[in-house]
Image (tube, rainbow, N blue to C red; front, top):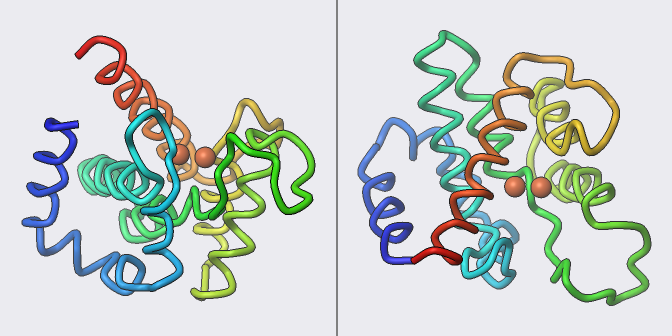
Length: 158
Ligand SMILES: [Fe+2]
Ligand SMILES: [Fe+2]
């Protein structure tokens, strides 16, 4: 947890990155992600924030669309419920359904381009079968899984 907080503080110092997702992280609905646990002690907001930053760094390095990837990554888990509980008539398995829920929520508050929509909707690939359409979508599927393992590793082994 200490390491994650340190990393988050460092990321806030990268003004070029923060500028790209500023309107998203200042949105009150997006801030609600802080109230929901994602993996172990990491909340959904911090998880998306770190994933978004790694997507930004990777895409920038390899000359991909880092703006769309960073913005979509910040929104990719905007499902706004406790996935450990079956509440409010929620149906289906969270792993399969939450990309669509996150996409629907994100499109209520932001104008998403086609690439951002694909990145959010396909981020659980290959758990969900539909193939990502863009390179940036694959970037998120890999970085999301990497961060999930990292968040879990620090809980289990630290
Ligand atoms: Fe997810
Ligand atoms: Fe995620």
